[in-house]
Image (tube, rainbow, N blue to C red; front, side, top):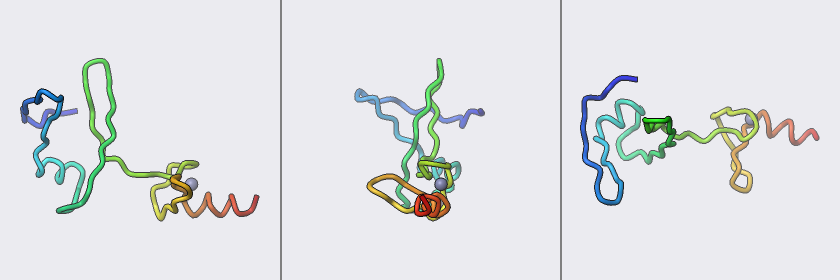
Length: 83
Ligand SMILES: [Zn+2]
């Protein structure tokens, strides 16, 4: 992990504003694309990773189908249909 050499204040509500160009560079986000981040913690660090939904069964991230709020990939969906 390397420093981005950027220091930002934390406001009284615990919020930090991240530079937009940093998000687009690191997360490869397009202009006006809605991003969600997943927060990971270690003993002395907080790490943000771009959140991308994945299949609840196999972690595949492509062509997901929503089933009652759960994301399922086509391969696992086919397996479920054969049960
Ligand atoms: Zn799957």
